[in-house]
Length: 410
Image (cartoon, rainbow, N blue to C red; front, side):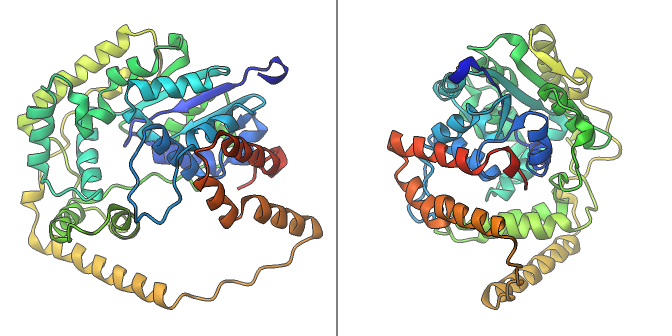
């Protein structure tokens, strides 16, 4: 490294549905406060980490997708992280889905630095309902019982269960083994997600790994990613069954997942929370105990309480989607239809943009510099040519020029 320095780089690889969205919002909404404590966030926004993850995992891109290509984005993000004077954080929960060569490439690309891997882990009893809901929000059509049966009875017994989506993200011990091959065990951090209590507890644990003061962060904008109620998930699942197959996934993500699921359905008051049926409790308990024993026997740095990964007694009688009154699903459908109609109107007749102040001469120069080096057109041209190593290096240089510490403000 230049000058003999060796920064620390923390790679938060997931798992999904373990408070990752909350942690990422806490990081990005406190960028300046983190910079003041020596923690750098490479990239310009959180989506840059997701784009880099897609590049690393060689995720396919639909030809009609209007987003820019992400080829070369991992090298760009890694190059930016290596410029950190003290420490940097990369966070994308889908990194947990890397295969061994991809994880190997990720760690080796950062090894001039002191690399740390962070994995957040959640109790299986609460993870399973959350993951079924996520499959529905990503256009899945399988009902709860059918999906759960596939995960438990078919996928978990496969010779390589990581070929299936759920286990790709949540075969915790296999993921840790894959990402830790080039690292000492004390640089692999496993954070347990509390089953109860405020979300700030998870931030305190995460901050302790980074070695920063958790109290210096403002968590007002780092709200937790709300889950859907039973009626809302069931409505969305039925909607997925009726959507035309030719609808591209990128369009579904932008309009159904983001607008309908995240903005509309998640805002409705939940009337029921999905739990594990009694017939599956023994399997969940057994798998949880295997995981806890494996983590306890490992030499990894455990942050939190492994007992939080064990199932808790049910708070009430089991109630599944099949037990829902029809009027609750209808209410969710009406709310969704109204919201999409309103969104369509706003897209067609957008409100005039607010008038902005001119600002000082320095602010004008900064805006001009940003538009020249990182405007939409410039960014698109560079991304389309990022197969070339020289272009990737240029993008790292531009980022270094634009985001020196006094500009680390959201």
